[in-house]
Image (tube, rainbow, N blue to C red; front, side, top):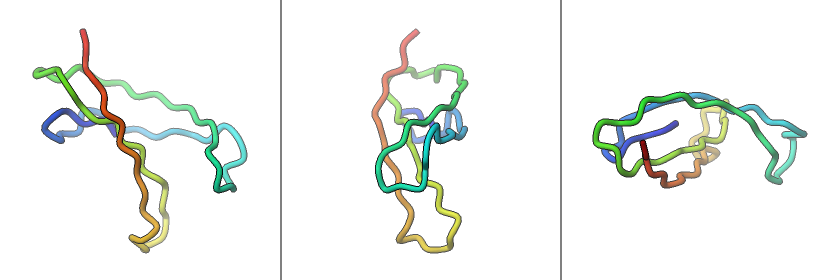
Length: 71
C-alpha cells in the first residue's frame, strides 16, 4: 500500500514471493504498484503488510518505508 503524507491511500497492490516462502527468513518478492503522484507531492509511506489469513491480530505485521514523491 502507498499512502500520501495525510495517510490517504494512493495505490494498493500485492507482491509475490520469488522463492520458498515457508521460512522465517526474508525472501525475494516481486510486484508492481502504479499510481499518480499526489497533488501535494512531498512525502509518503510505502507499507508492506504480512499476509495473515487467521483472525489472530497478534500475527499481524507490517513494515513502513518513508518515500518522497518527485516529478
